[in-house]
Length: 465
Image 1 (cartoon, helix red, strand yellow):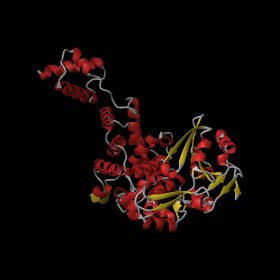
Image 2 (image 1 turned 90 degrees about the horizontal axis):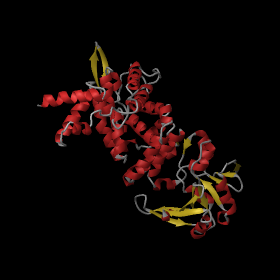
Image 3 (image 1 turned 90 degrees about the vertical axis):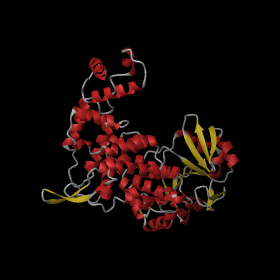
Image 4 (image 1 turned 45 degrees about the vertical axis):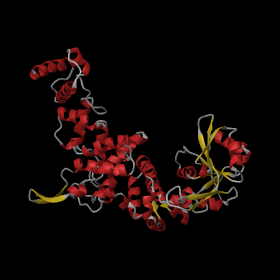
């Protein structure tokens, strides 16, 4: 066993040292892995041996509020007075008895040998333990070496009991830049038919982690490909082998392009500094931006040269993206934002005027030109070895949006229903028609302030008569 320095929160160390029921407890799972990777640790999981569930709960209650979550899995959440929450679990055996994530027979065993407890975990990088009393790492399955060599390896044959572990492998591969071991690829392929057992909520959870936590999203997509699971996501699988014009896309087919775009995105400050849900929107927009190229790509002759083109792919990608996002359970409020970014990701190639930028900002709602520009930059940077500098068209769009104050918001209607009431008009379906016409005129720069809106309204009402 290797000695390991592990800085624990002061209160957690106090709990471990002063609670008799925790005399044989170990830090497990992601917190040990992240310590070895030098990453910040936000969640601490502790597995407790040689004690019953009732005794464990009584011991924890001295320190704060204790809740039993997932009774069948024996996990106690301790919320201490400083607001931190720690998970304490009992060692258990899981036996697959029926399809689905509820089809397990769970047996708690306080005397379970440590190697057997560690073998229950999905991957070797998650099977390590840390003994806080001895200050040592316990690693029965070579998780530390796999981390060092960036290998994702399943821990035991029990891996095949839960197909969700394949999707967990996807997001782990992306977060830690891991390559699957050949035997793990084989294990994933062997349970591909079990994909239908997964509830959409569980699928969504792993895709959200992929979208919001990745260091290299392409590692996750290639993991699915190597594992024989990419076909469960046909919109992505269809990108493979779709040719692109070499002059503009020297990187290869559309799948290769999207992988490069995603890896470029997560290196951008706009993504790194974004909140988790904002990252999700940006990542899925980049993933989906070329979903329609498989159905729009063809060869044509331009200026006597055969070219590969995909006209209108941005507009046609919207419905395909919506279908994909619905299948993996992304909520509609995020899907709307993602689809707006996908269907407008070529907007910078149009002639930029104040009018076109105002209309673009309005068309993007509830998204923003700022986020659109991030997606466009990822698209442009996903074409190695081409330049990693933003195009003049993108810079022009950003500049005009900045000058118009539309980087982070859409134009707001100047004329309101109150203005119509002040003119003596009574509420009716006519209101909506007038206000819609007013907003269209505003976008076309027919007026820019309240005084101009009043003049426009006078003219509009006179024309109606």
